[in-house]
Length: 552
View 1 (tube, rainbow, N blue to C red):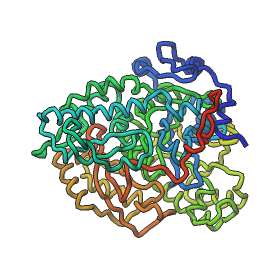
View 2 (cartoon, rainbow, N blue to C red):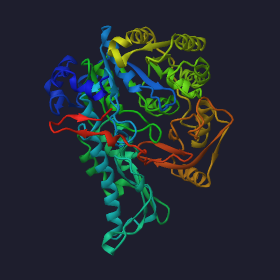
View 3 (tube, helix red, strand yellow):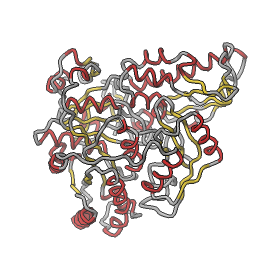
């Protein structure tokens, strides 16, 4: 059986100019990055300002398992399926991070015959957006530390520095480090650490900014430290906002590529949903809505993380979702049902594990958006399991549609596509889970109780202190970005399925003043991951003729 990268390499791609032309774009509307990639010009918003927005479909999933669910694969498959039935659809995705690509995942561009291409380039350096984000973030850090070294006119307290350097790699040794060691010219010695690039506030700002002007303003509002009197110090105070905007002037433009079936795909931004807000850029999504009649986007990890943040953070920027698709697999549900071997028939484990999917269905309905369950079909699925899962989903008032997009591409999602078209004709009554006027503490409690089904929330002494600080800074009306394990509704990754009778613990807060939200750190979640025992990088290589191998 061919690997994902082998399937992608054998595909015959259209030149990106052909894809752009099919979308109604002219040469002035994009900049080519080689034959098969392009940057879209932001002037397209002005050119299409009078055009009605298309329909917005969110692809989310159950809590992830080691078996894999295929959310990106389903996203790409549905976009291709919509085009198969004659609709003008665009896939809008996040950019993969090198950290997971060389860590556990090995690639994040879909799978089988439902991929975005050129897969190897998208998974590696792509158009350099992540490098720009990394450089921009680290420039702020360098300018702040230089300011301290050069006399510290702002009276910055080295013990109250909030911003961290970042890199797009899993590197546990950099989580907690000492910098400035040695001679006086090496700077002020202090405790510091790195985050992975996708967790940086610059990444969040890129994904939430509406244009370059807005990005520059948000960068200036990044809270980088407090001075020795406890007053806030922002990135604009060290005069970093202009230079950062300069670094980001190309990165802010969305990237245009294609699927294996030549469906347009806009890929831009890549925050993780466990430690960030987990959605592609607002610019990419809104541009997709102007250029396509249907936009299929995604939010990272399970619906308790990605979808909740998509609705309660991203959609507050004048976005109205038309439908949500929850991706699941029979194998993953059997895992949630504690099956010892998910490859053999086990209807009992499936029924037990269904509790995870059931809770996600109930949660998504709280946003008053139509819900459909998209089942990623595998060869190991038995007739009895398919029958049982169909019955369970229908009993909960929605529809389970089995899809074969990995093997069949868009053809395998035609039934799902037809259902989406039929059920997005009417406007819905979309609403947020919470009002922004609620204090941060109450927002967290509402998410914990209504989405996670926790009995309550405990706040550490550090978190309580930060809550007071947030209120004093006038940020109590910000939305909350919950950072926790993706494997469970709780903050304990071992509690799979649909756990009850637990409390969650907020250990700390991160104030993302520029991005416009407050990050609540739950349990032992970290913003710099480590590599697994056998990282995917061990299998990655490039042959003498330039052929990429090992990327899934």
